[in-house]
Amino acid sequence: MMDNPPIGGTTGLCHERSAIVEQAAIWLADQSQPPRPIIPALRERFNLSALEATEAAAMSERFRMLRKAFS
Image (cartoon, rainbow, N blue to C red):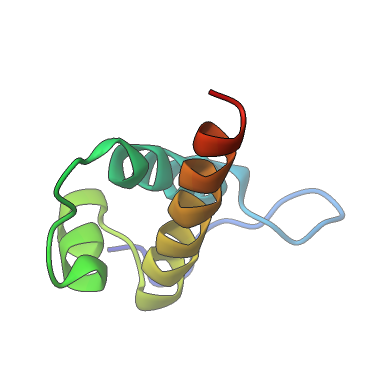
């Protein structure tokens, strides 16, 4: 796991890590039976920090709501 991810640009965000969080969120949103517990599963599968896994879990819920609303 990356302790100090590279930070770039003026936003202070690491775009590489943000993309991994988004990938994890998409993967989780696609699961008909999400793994339990979710956070440890995301951390292990995508090599995320606890904060990143939490962000991915929240993002996946937004993805699911949007899919329902627009499908």
